[in-house]
Length: 245
Image 1 (cartoon, one colour):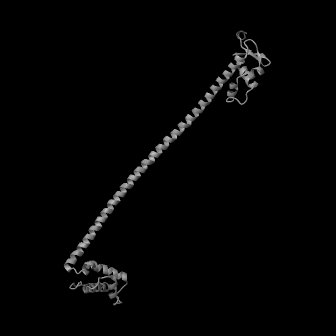
Image 2: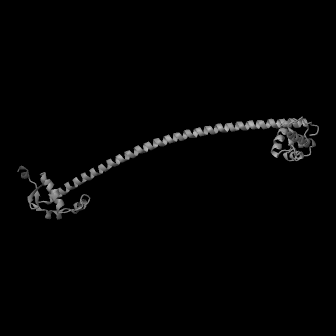
Image 3: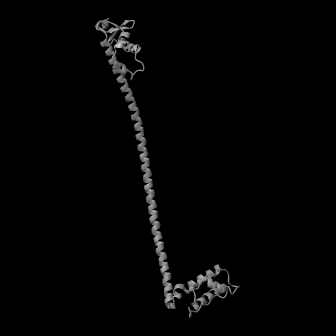
């Protein structure tokens, strides 16, 4: 602005002096804002000290900070004293905004760190639960396998018991077919076995016939139960005198 006097510049820094002088002139004229474009345009008139736009920009930034230059305030026509206060207030406001932003960032950083720690804790807890669950599942699988084996043994036992009970019933059926005092040949006995026995026998043997029935009867003859052999495939009911002999 008009009335402001430029501070003395170091003689040994001609380039900086030229930039500051051009900026002061543009500011004093008050017709346009002090910017790199118009400052560099004036400095380039002195080709020996102009430098490139980067160098000019650095000197111009120093000038604006030193002079407390605010183009918005100055172009609005605000008095120097007021503009200086406004510029200072703007700097303080900017610093306060930066401090507030830094605090917000710090709070966010702390929040994120806490969230990450919580997530890790939950993940570790979940992994522990998974490990425990897998151990339980493995134990359950072992128990299922054990119970499966036990069930299979029980099934085999039940099949054996049922088979023994069935063949006892077959033997009893043969005993009832035989006359009280006379012997019969196997070929005469087999056709008289009830159809229900023949049908049920399919669950315990692949072939029903004379040889199978002979085995059932001979086993009891051997242990002196129910039957006595007369020879040539003939059998009769066992009598008390058979045991006395």
